[in-house]
Length: 239
Image (tube, rainbow, N blue to C red; front, side):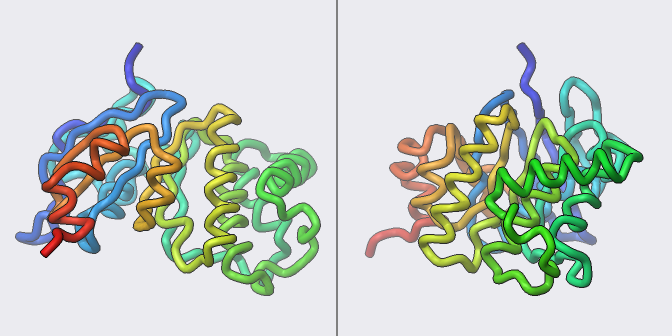
């Protein structure tokens, strides 16, 4: 059975700078794959290449058996792959519910159907009691959950989460970890960018490590944390 997502020799250049260089790996259906690396390693750029915000300079992305070359993000989303952003930007003057309705309208022209789909996602992320609040009034932890709910409302087969635990306290991070695992139980494949190694170890079936835009390592969590190159590049070599 073919992987759900195939990254084949993807490079992305900005002028003379290689943000990604010859990156290749697969994601199988039902997996959670962690993507880690130092700041500036090219993780978010790779996400942008995968979902169509940037066209790869070289290489190709294949999702669900289809080449993504030339497809815009809205088309990629309709095909079943969507992402969150490091900096959450809710529609602050709309209600929590209506923020998620915006995502649900990707799949239906009926506002009534979209509202019911939105409520389903708010229940999943634990925000059903906040649906009438203005999104701008939510604290950061709940804004992160709202971002996830809005993307889930597009009914993705695959979800790319970009530092969804950034800026959260340990209790809030635990809630997000449990949410990511629950999303997988709903049948959605996930890739997760995260700096919290304890979190990524708990979540991931496999981990891909980027460094200076290149793939440094790939393997099971235990293999990655014991890899000397990863320790030096990302975890910090011992003196």
